[in-house]
Length: 313
Image (tube, rainbow, N blue to C red; front, side, top):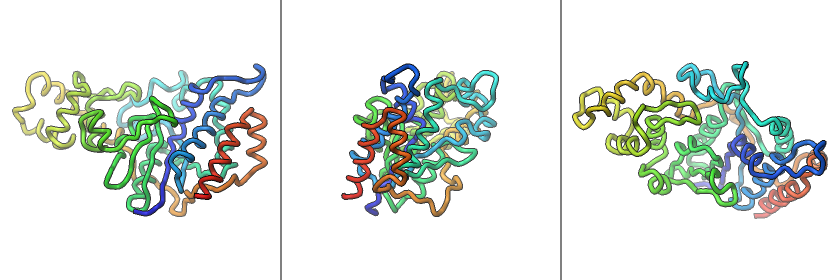
C-alpha cells in the first residue's frame, strides 16, 4: 500500500455540525454569523493534525436530492424540502450566508473542493475512495451512517464518524467496529441491512415491521439482500408468516432501494484532480480577510499551523 493518506470530507455534515456545536459569540448582533465558519476551520485543523493526511478533498453536495434517487423513491429527503419549492433544502437562516464563506476559505487555503452536478457528496466520496483502491489509505469524515457502506478493511477504507464525539473524539469505523456495533461483517452488509431497516432521516421507508435486529439476522443468514430476495421468491421455509407477508409486500420498494441507498462509485470526476494537501494557503490575503471579517483569527491560525506542520512530516 502507498504511503498516501487520502481524507475525504463530507463537507455539509461537518459545517452543519459546526453550526450547531459552536456557540454564536458575535461581538455585536450586527456582526455577520460566523460559528459554522470558525468551527469548520477548526475541524480541518484538528483532522490534519490528528490523522496527517497527504491528500484531502472537501466533497460537496452539488445536488443534495438527485433526480435519479427521487424518481426511484419520491419520499427521499422530501421532508427537508423548503415548502413551496422543489429543490431547496431547509437550512437555518444564519447558516445559509456562511456556506459561501466556507467555500472561499477552502479556496484560499488551496484545499480541493469537489462536487458533481446531479450527485451528492456521498457519491463523490464513494467514487474517490473507489479510485484510490490500492494507491492510498482512505479516511472518510462524516456524521452520516450511510457512508458506513464504504468501509473495507482490505482496501484500507474506514470512516471517521463524528456524530457523537465530533472530530476530537470520533468513532473510527472499520469492519471490526461494524461487527461489534451491528453484528455485521462489512460495509456492503451494512448497506443491505439499512435498506431493510429504512431510515426516516432520509425518507426511506424500509420494510414495515423489520427493525434493525431482524434486518441484521436476515442479512447474516442469507449473505446479502439479493440472496434474501431469491430465498423469498423460491419459498424458503425459514421465511414464513407475518415476516414473509411483509417482505413480499415490500417487493416494489426493495426493487428500487439499492439504486437510492448505494453510493455511486463511477461519478465523472476529473482524471487530473489535484488532491495533495497544500503546505500553505494559496491566497493569504483572502484568508486574512475571512479571519478579520468573521472573527476567526484563532481557527484560521490553527489551520495555517496544521498545514505547515503536515508539510514538514
